[in-house]
Image (cartoon, rainbow, N blue to C red; front, side):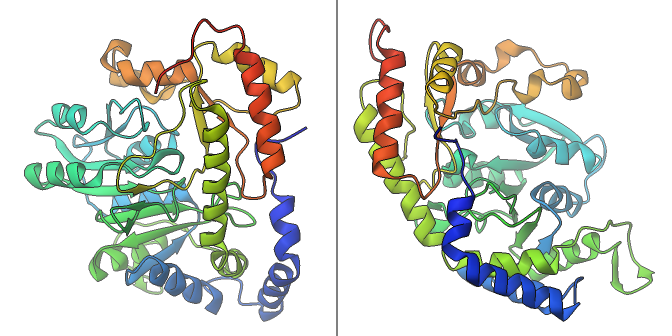
Length: 372
């Protein structure tokens, strides 16, 4: 069996260093806001070429707090793509404002700027930009739209740590950049964790207050916040892993290139747009008879997943928004065809070749290859 993700191979490579860091954090007994947290915040900010980073409890909380920091009213709107994980829009609703959806570019699965601009209303105040599957969204176009309409921009980088758009790392171009350290991510912790990059010191200070019950000074609360801290033990582990992230992303790109060479002309492959550096959190192909192909691959010992079978505008949790499925043709097409193949840095060329062979076997009965 070749799983879609395998964490133990990474653990085996850095076991001694990782366990030493975690044990040191345990022995310190500084479990809340320990020195490891500040050190990791500084290192993560420096790795991105930015000065402000705030560790939080999860990627979802990173988004939630960034939206809270905008001080929006309940009737105001924040736009996100309809095709993404629910946290991107769920955080908008949890922050007390209204989610709105736009369609995607069918080639990159990211926001379609033209459709985004059509969705802007007098109530729109911000955009959540998702860099889905590790591919950067078209930030120049999105930022121009934001400037034109006086909107804030929050980057959801949960799947794209280290991805680059025109030489700039994702998370550094909007007002806030939000990251997840869930174990499966490109930079994965040993539990939950997240980070917010802020463009300004004032923005970072607002996040720090919101994540700590709304206070600068203990027991003096200037606003209502919450408890969302990055654990010291997570920070210690992530400091170790951050040193290897560039190499791991390079290895993901190696795996993706091997898939592409093997499967070119066989089915619709992930696109890497000009001036973008894709970090392939997922290697997501499009297959017309997707469910049959998934069943075939699993029967042949190849793990695969559907990200995502139900788009946000179709979710029961957002039914009250009243969207019509026909409003999102590219999203609908994607959810019917997407299939993510095994992707992790330690996949060998031989394993990729084996997976590719089995993908070809499930496509053998197709009438014709799918063009990109």
